[in-house]
Structures are given as structure tokens and as C-alpha cells.
Amino acid sequence: MKNDKMKQQYRINEQIRVREVRIVGEEGSTVVPTRDALNMAREQGVDLVEISPNANPPVCRLIDYSKFLYQQKKRQKEMKAKQVKVEVKEIRFGPQTDEHDYQFKLKHAKEFLEEGNKVRAYVFFRGRSILFKEQGEVLLLRFANDLEEVGKVESMPSLEGKKMFLYLTPKKAGEKKKSQQARDRERLRVGDGSGVAAEAESRESKKTQVAEAKEVKEEMPSNGGLFANAKISADALKKLTESED
Figure 1 (tube, rainbow, N blue to C red):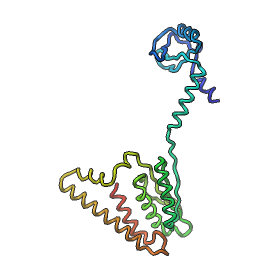
Figure 2 (figure 1 turned 120 degrees about the vertical axis):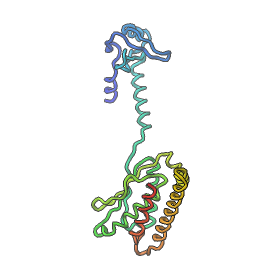
Figure 3 (figure 1 turned 90 degrees about the vertical axis):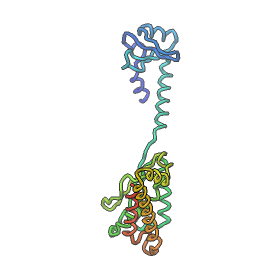
Figure 4 (figure 1 turned 180 degrees about the horizontal axis):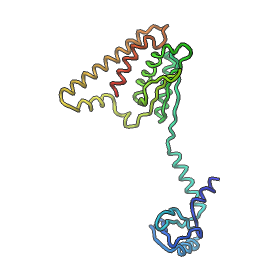
């Protein structure tokens, strides 16, 4: 079926009914009457194949038609292999996900992003666990922060029914190579002295926010799950994400 469709794309020999054609080959191109081009094809034991019908005059090649179709099919296969197929990979959490499970899913998400795929992470709230949606928000914000080297946030956590979603897209190669320190230096070069001071103050504030978030997480009781006291750390991580934007 595929070969039949490909054959219908090209006119050959007597199917080419124009006054003149342009013959292209290794030695260049030349415009000749179609009748002369057909005679040249017969003498060489090949076909006259029209490869560009919309050109003026139409462009043709002197080549065995079966060989030509094989080359076209091979070229299409190579182009298809080079195309990067982007998939959306899902990562599912519960509001009380433990640290081991979190790290396991974080590892897989990093692999997905490095392969060029998007990641849709979500927290599923079963039954009355919807009351602890702040825990899910903290979890997703931490997830995004832990993946900042390989992915960027496409949309912030949002609640849809019983699921809270976070979308991440892979960073381009150039984005990965630029460190946070380099980005800070670039921002410090812009503006006058007061601007530099403000930027430095902003960095110090960000460090404080990160430290506060870590302290809250370390002080969480083990029986309260991974994300107890969620609202405090959620606010800290939100500020961190906003400052990065």
C-alpha cells in the first residue's frame, strides 16, 4: 500500500506531458525538450522521473524508477528516526508519600525529562484526604524544585477534582549548562549600584527562605507523614519559586 501511494506521487516517462524538462544529475542541470529527455533515458536503460512537478520547467532525473523509490523510502525512514517524539509521562503521588517512594519517583522523573519528555506529576486525594491538599501542594513544589536542573515548571500546582497537577517540561541543553551562580552574576551586571545591592539582598532572602523550608521539614514528626505542617513550608517554597521566575 505504501509503495503504491509513493508511485502515485511521481510521473515517469510518457506520463510527463510538458514541452521541456530540467534534467538534474551529478554533473549539474540542463533544460532539454521532453522528447530528447525520454530518448536519453532509453539510451541509458533508465527512467525519466519527475521529482519536482511545480518547478518551471519541471525537474526530472534519469534513474531506475525502482531504485528511486527505494532511495525515497530509505530517506523517509531516516527522517522519521531523527524526529524526537515527545511523550507526557505521569508521576503519581499520595498526600502522605514517604521519603523512599518520593526519591524513587524523583529519579524516574529526572530520566523522563533528560530523554526530552514532559512530566505530569499529580497528587491523588482519596476520600477525606482532600482536607490535606496543602500537603500535596508542598510535595509538588518540592518536586519541581528538586528537578530544576533538568526541567522547568510549565504550570503551577492546580487542583482539578480529586487531583492536583503540576506540569514540567525538559530544559534545553543550553539552559542546563548555565548554573544558578552564573545567572546571578548576569543579573548583578545589570543596573547601577543600588540595583546590585537590591539583587544581593534578594539572594540573601532566598537563602533564608530555603533554610526555613528545610528546618520545617527536618522538624516534622515521623508519625505526621513526609509533609506535616504543610502550610508553612508551602508558603516558603512558593516564595522561592516566585523569586526564581
